[in-house]
Each structure stands twice: as C-alpha cells, then as structure tokens.
Picture (cartoon, rainbow, N blue to C red):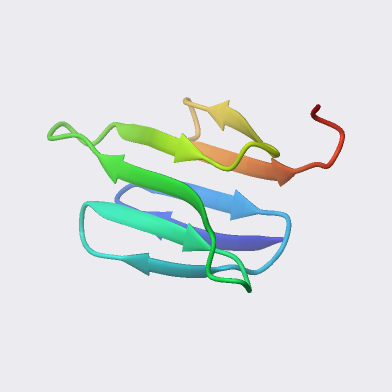
Length: 76
C-alpha cells in the first residue's frame, strides 16, 4: 500500500503513483501520466474528491480521516 498525506487526511492507494500537490490540492498520476484522482481541501479542512478515474473505488473513513482508493477492471 502507498500512503500520502493531504492536510489532516491520509490517502491510501493500492499501488505507488506519482502525486503532484501543493498545500490544498493534489493530482494523482499513473505511469502513463493519466490523471487518476483530483483532490482538494476545502477552507475548513474537509477533503473534496473532484474527479476519479472510471475504474477507481473510494472507501472513505471520515472518523479516521482516511480515504482508500482501489483500482479495478471489473467496473463496466
């Protein structure tokens, strides 16, 4: 598992991806430089998932401020 922090949130991915970010936003890229996830923080620190790749499932644990992203080829 590959983890990365954005604000107080922990992002967990099932493989290592390249992440480009600043203090309030992040773009997750695969090895082909395809944008898989676009995330940002709201002014009060909540996580906003703005876009995900079609084959990505998000599991959100708000109490732990943790989001786990799973890639799958089973979505059709």
